[in-house]
Length: 113
Image (cartoon, rainbow, N blue to C red; front, top):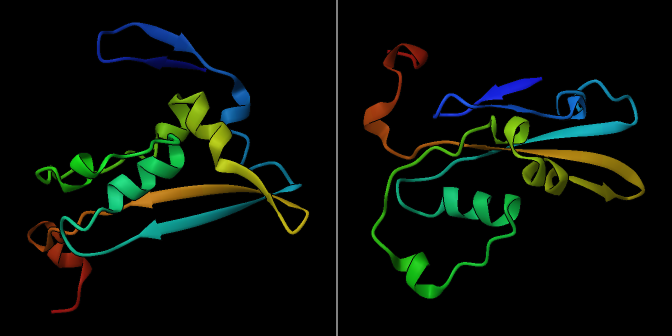
């Protein structure tokens, strides 16, 4: 599998990145993180997925709205490896999904009128 970067360069990735969903001995757990705007959803996900320890300054820094891309599991081997764990002797692959808290960006057609 080839992944193109913003600069146009291509990087070859191991095919096992795409096969977590297809492996019969691995349970895939999808965890959707929801909450109000600027409460730290993205920082929480990045701390888990990238093993990042944040300083108090970083935690209190000005909020920058972001959406942590689900495709990080496909393009970053470190994130993929950290998503795998064993719980009660069962191999699991944790997929963290970030959402935005800004209700102005809600898709109105997705909700009842």
